[in-house]
Image (cartoon, rainbow, N blue to C red; front, side):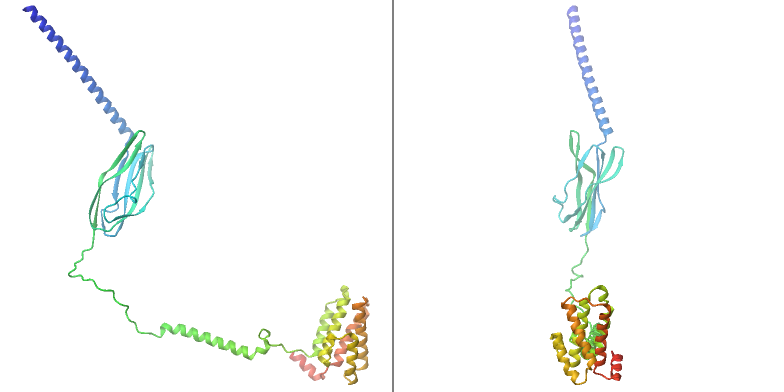
Length: 350
């Protein structure tokens, strides 16, 4: 019996030893797992998971007011965070998103930075709104998760108290009648009268001086024939055409001046006549004593020389050209139709 007891006791001791060893091994695994979890938590705390905070600009607004919703995220530079599309998602009854601002970076400190997202909103229904915590999508290496703000979004929308029994709505009032005042149109009336007066003065001036305004069909008073001819002869002489070898133009100018003078002075259509026809036509005023023999012969010689210069390419000398000028000048001067007193008066008026 003693032996059997000893064997049984030995077996019990061996069994207890095995159980103790298994217990020790199990406890070791538990301790190792706990240490690993603690190390993982410490590592995660060292990396720094993003922190999300969300808040309204004001916790209470009036109906129809505009306010901002701002969400801030403090994160590592390698972590990626995205925000929901509030403008394209369903909002509480009466709430609208007016402006969706882009994401902005607020602060940067080493590897940590703070970003912010804002929305401009308005609401049209009164009440207390509890929108819960605000979500943000989080991505870091192989981690894809949804982060939530620490606090819930709450907003109180107040309205105006209207007592329908006391505050009765009224119809739109018509425009208030204002008596007519002369000052309202006095300035315009004075302007209209000034314009009418100015127009009247302009019309009176046009009617009075119409004959002196070429644009209105008026003709400037003609100079006496001899005055016009002498002025044109002096202007032609001042051009110094012979000195520049322009003999033909010089004689053509002299004969044209004489033709115009004879036409106006004696009524002879000299502009369409040849030199011979002009000489024959001047025989009439010569017979009447209006042209003496010397001036008649000077005219004949001048016209013949001019024809030779113009058509036969005669080159006269300087003396002949001076003689042509003086012959024309004295022909005009000694055949003019006015007496000396009238001539001086005419020149003074001109």
